[in-house]
Length: 169
Image (tube, rainbow, N blue to C red; front, side):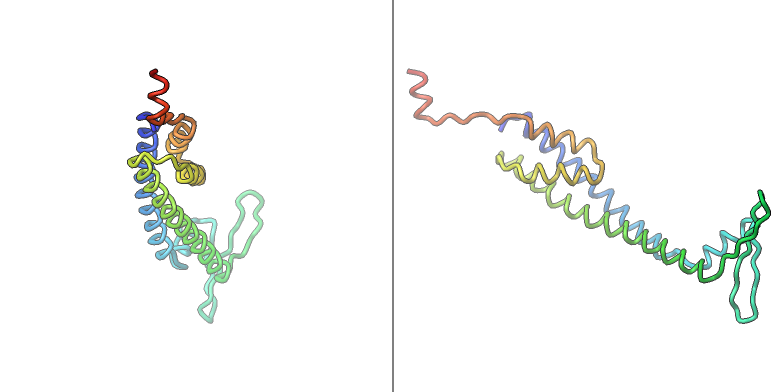
């Protein structure tokens, strides 16, 4: 393995390790955000807008009436609609968090494998190709470029000692 290929493999895997740290941090932030979203926050958003009028019912239920400023048409947003919106938002945010965390673990494994192969000067390409594909999923352009260059660079041809003696004679 030549030094240039080894350098690209090492640099690409180190950049991937840095991006893994950022992705894990993002995943935990998304989990925290998803856990604090609730119905009261959604109601505060509606209360802050003057286009929405809150109507309280006797049983404790409520709904909002939205008046369209352009045509004056009115729409009703019930508490069930608000609860469904909160649940959908939580589901989307938690799904994104799980996606980030799962993808970061996969990238971590293959970035370490690429780094290990670069250090041991192994010619196994499965880790490079897998890290390339995973970097496509995360839009990590620098790692993609480094892995493509590492795949394109040719390895040094190892000439056995017997053939080298024959060539010199």
